[in-house]
Image (tube, rainbow, N blue to C red):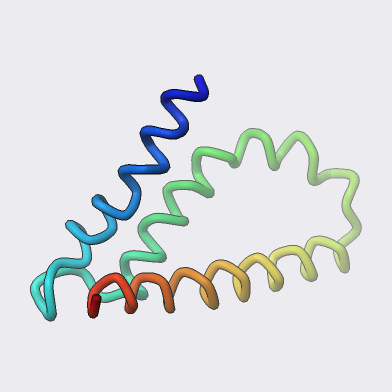
Length: 85
């Protein structure tokens, strides 16, 4: 499992660069981040549905807000940097 995880982690920049393309040939950074994390959210939805019923509405709103700011803030800059490097 560790070897698989390390291999996938090592291939992530290659996949990112391929999907973003060079200059203006690939997906826009925001679309790429939305696609990437939308698929991830679907994969973890069963786990979230079993754990979220204990959260209050306020905790859920704070968690969603912080998640969106964190994912957007890091990955948008990362994707734009990958495209230009």
